[in-house]
Amino acid sequence: MKSSSLTRAVLSTVLQPVFSTRPNPGRTVACSVAPPKPKVPLYQRPPAFRAALSELKKWHVWAKNQAAAVGSTFLDLDDGPDSTLLLRELNWLVEDALEQPSLLSPKNSSSNYDDAAPVSIRACLDDLYKLWKQRIEERRPFQYVVGCEHWRDLILSVEEGVLIPRPETEIIVDLVDDAVRGNEELRNGIWADLGTGSGALAIAVARILGVGSGRVVATDLSPVAVAVASYNVERYNLQNRIAVRLGSWFDPLEDVEGELCGLVSNPPYIPSEDIDGLQAEVSKHEPRLALDGGANGMNDLIHLCNGAASMLKPGGFFAFETNGETQSKCLVDYMDTKMKGSFYSINITPDFAGIQRFVTGYRA
Image 1: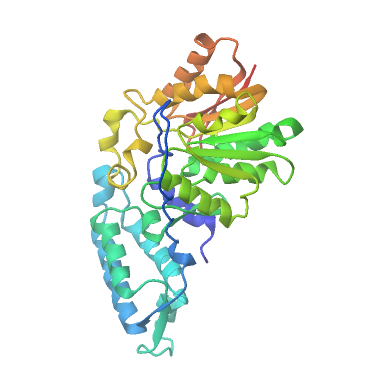
Image 2 (image 1 turned 135 degrees about the horizontal axis):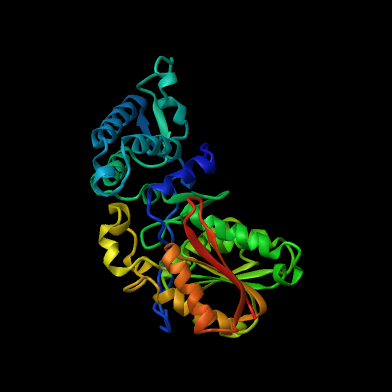
């Protein structure tokens, strides 16, 4: 792909920071059917289709007009994308779909390339019309349209049924980096990413741990998420360092109980009554089970906190993402009172916008 990951990753800031597929605490899962096969992101597909340049130009003009017509309607309605962002997304769609995206660049409007000549594309022209209509008319998230998300220095496959990783969650990776720096026991131990979704955190943490003996176990209740995470893990050739397991939260980790050196999670934390008020891209398309944290958004965070006490070895590190300052303070208060003596060095860390979002600490 020709876009920088930093440029594409900015797209996620238009979506409210909500994360990972939500397993019900304590629920066990049996899967007797073959896991679903993940969809191949658009940019990874072979350019097996052809269309005349003139027809592609016609589609491009139509798509730009569709985006321009939105104006600030979505922004005013639910803080959704405006025309400027949609036009930027259209440029990214062109980069992913065309083998030679520069053919639709305004700079090449006077080129000598024959308008009747066939152009190689990665989806048929009818599908390009359908994909852009879905983006505008249905508010389908752009990441689902192209099948991937640029996150940190990764390009991750995503699709319906898997939460789109947000930029805020990248801070957890930085917190892990700080924790393992100079601590070889943590760096070479077993880590867990609970509610892994696309596998973003698991992959990033494994890369931070390096090529030593450190390993990551990633769990998720969703068979779709497990399939997508496994796809992403294999794409980055980390299948020998990351095990992706199907199951609810700690259930797949019985073999490493009390042995974890690290635990990370960006669980569902949106209060139930707030979900319908989220952007249409989120509330209508991303899985509700990945959003709903219960009446006050704390259900899964409390469950994770309780489990961390039994799963982490002494000195083991944890980092949880929350909805903001209120939840972070509630979680810290819960640890200090209901779980007194279980953890130490508990801290709250802000996100990029200064919101107190991450709770970290160590097992006593």
